[in-house]
Image (cartoon, rainbow, N blue to C red; front, side, top):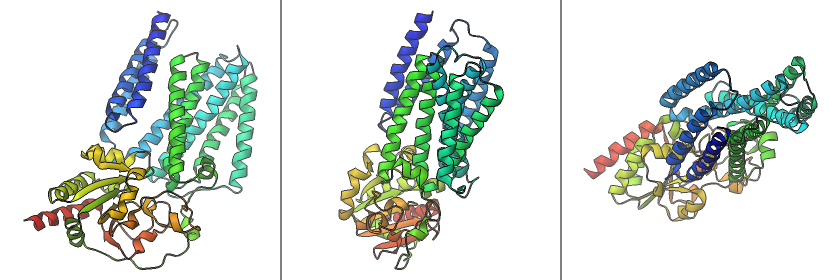
Length: 458
């Protein structure tokens, strides 16, 4: 039976890797998720046949409760709330890894080898940090925490807290029978470290943080897989940790920021003051004006952002794009790597609306086309189209690769109000001579544009 279980684990690990590979393309991502899901079900079922396993009733009860909650949330959570759901789910994985380490210490399962104890301690620290950090990220994205918080001498406090926590963890790892008080202090410090790392980070850096915490969770799971001598956990944790780390590096590169800068010098709501004043004036268009501009253009590039997600306007945007194409207008969609509040947020929304994959382009693929574009339509995006990233060395986002929206002949921006974006930085694009603002909810504005486009064709 043990040989059969290990063989199934091996097959499941292969399917996990193939599923992750399939997730790298929008065309096969759904298939990859399904493969990984079926593989996980197989892994859970075969685990029940591990010799010496006990407490089946408790395990089945936990699985049923967890599955019911996940099924309900998966069916009811809005697409705009998907980033915080991803954050909290990721946190649950880190918390589970930390809990495994706690149980291993309490039962004395780490005494057989110092290496096992050390890995258990490291996994506990990383898992607890991922759990606490993900909870803070969830609270920020959900609007429960509306400000960033920094303690006096924030970076020094974090450094010494991390040093102290790791020191206690290593002591526990080498100990044959750590006490309950020692373990409690250790986990409280690790949780505090995760919270302190995430509390100062503002919305502009949140996509990178979510990806980084995901990598932490994978690493913690891999360590605890070693503690439990479970190769499947080792493989799954390593794959998640490696892919999460790679994604984090790519996201940070897309913002021209190092991971160290994101954690220790985040962009906060006070960033606007560092960027200096913006000259010029805002020029307003009505939805009817915008409709006429779009209708008589030859080429339009649509740049979606979080404002589109909040309004749930992705279906209306695709309907508008189809009307423009029927009128002979070439329409494309441009996606910045950090648009929205989690990696791939805009891609998911457009896919949900039915936008064909061949009409969606990444920054590197489409940036050169803006100079030959009649109209660039920006829907709720902000920092990812701010020319200050190229021209203003005082701006916190200077050097960040942006979509070259300002190079289009005319720019239309659908925006809920005149406030700054999630990072608190004023957008120079909005004050350019070729830019016009269309204020209102993206859902309502695009609906009016659709109505006017139909009238123009009548």
